Length: 162
Image (cartoon, rainbow, N blue to C red; front, side, top):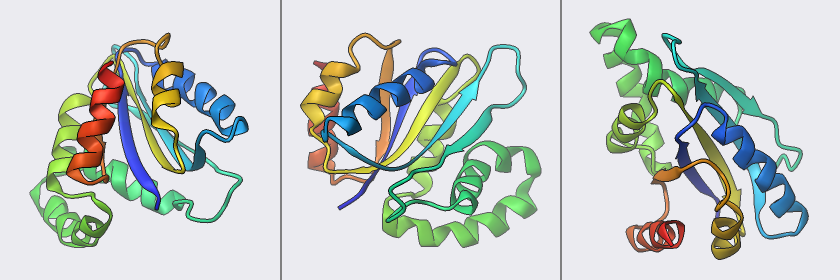
């Protein structure tokens, strides 16, 4: 089973640093990164920059269109107005099946702000305790959202808080 997780970092470069750690963890077979994308919002910028990290694993990887659509819903719909927002909202209903609902979008939009960054990660086969351990020396971070079950997400939050 793959998991879509969003981790927010307290600095614009934090997500890039986390991605480098994930590369190391993947080489150790502690996580399988299917795909990832980074949002960075430097201080003084009016909007965040986004970029997809193309995975070499292929299977299960998200398309650039998916990431663009998701980031549009999260960061740019509020700027485009109600008519476009309503149209995108109708299309976004299909994302609920993969754990991306209005609450996911709202929480992400509210927490990724100027001066922060976020790692959007599609992964599987993760050894969560080892990942949390390797993230200890990164800038402060917070798990924003995941499509794990409520119990799995609570456990993940507990691990990351340790």
